[in-house]
Image (cartoon, helix red, strand yellow):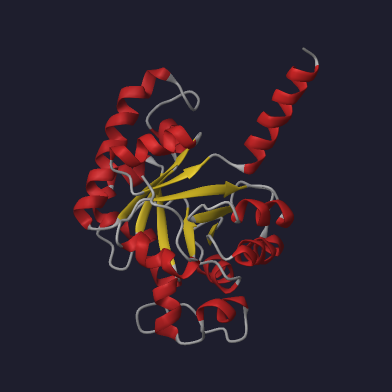
Length: 259
């Protein structure tokens, strides 16, 4: 179980050391709400730039909201393995990127390079942007502060799992259980027909990441599920999302009000 949130600047070394971390997911473009959640004690706040309603203009506001509380590290899930999007997310002040639909080691290497400056990578040293305020302007220091996390959620990723985890410079892999379930033949997320196959795949992913010496995370439906995944060998776990909890809370109050 997580021992409690550290300072944001401790996030990258803690992730790389495979310490247990708990995060929260933001899908709404609502900086005020994000700021509230960021002060609760989560180790990181993941902002969804792929499936959420937040697009690039909102990324910087979200990172500013997270940084305002100085408790959690801000991460951005970018839309794809696109060096431009990755650079934009990091320039916005994210302390790491979650890269979706990584299919093989080449995809992972492109993502890693986009997070690192020359000679290790292709990231541009951008000068007076938000990242400079929190992480400085020295390339090596910026590189040390930013984590690169590749999602494992496709059939290709499972086939190439060992090579992905062995990608030099990759800090972590992260399971998207919905897409992974579909890749295993599920008709919908939670389909009992793939329950055993999904469990086996999750065990393999966690073990492969551990053997490679990198962190391994997973998205969870609730806090209890996150605690269970951490006990199973995952090193970081993300809890649900703001939009899910907003709907659940509103529905619960409506039911109570109507008796």
